[in-house]
Image (cartoon, rainbow, N blue to C red; front, top):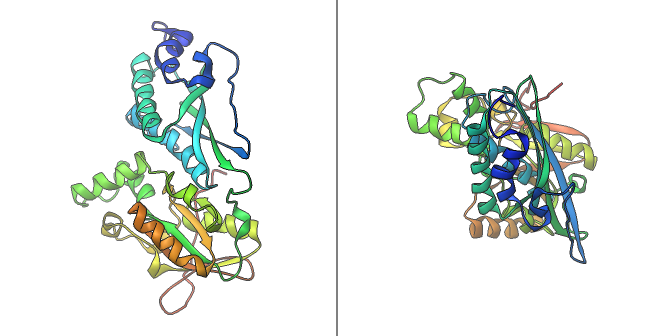
Length: 322
């Protein structure tokens, strides 16, 4: 915390108390109150982002806030839950002053309005290291209708929303890669990295359709591997079916690299073959591409195959912290 400025509680009163919903009690108490209607259950997730790892230190603070909220909302969508509330913890170095915090809070306010969520509380501390921001998101789902990772069955089709590969390429562009890309392609990839689009409308509508689901954060192949492990099945992904944006294609990156890059925050799910029409209707209703990319099989592991049915060698299937 800077030597001069609003201080911890001044920041809370000025920047964060206006974001509090009714359960947050004006951020004046030690905890929040949350009601859950009969027949509903809470879905709770937490993610942290670190300066220099998940965002660049000079990224605009309002966009950092929006990414922090959105990656958590993506986790709720991946269980078919509707977002309701969130808790926030910030560990900030002295260089991030009241102006930075004000812009950060403005970013949260903008996405609170967009996604219909409200702040319940949290904590703020100082650190001598990089900024660490942690957000816990709380959603609701009708009891028993949540979609887990463990429901995939042999014969299921594998689907993914939107396009893959844009997020990690956006980070690469910010770090100086692909200098010859057209300006509009650079802008598109950077936006996808800084401000992902959680599929909060799609997720809840997949209840009763998707058998297993997760969001694509570490990389499509790695995250599909999590579904396979939880479900005790294998997956075959057809490289030629992977949805790739014009901007990503312009980089010339290999499909295997796009499928393992991460930071897409699209929904990856499996569904019975007879649900194909339902998925296609959802795509048309939401005006969102949802692409079939492969099949669930017996066995274990994930294979990426080419147009001849040959397996494509993949190095790292996705991002790992350790």
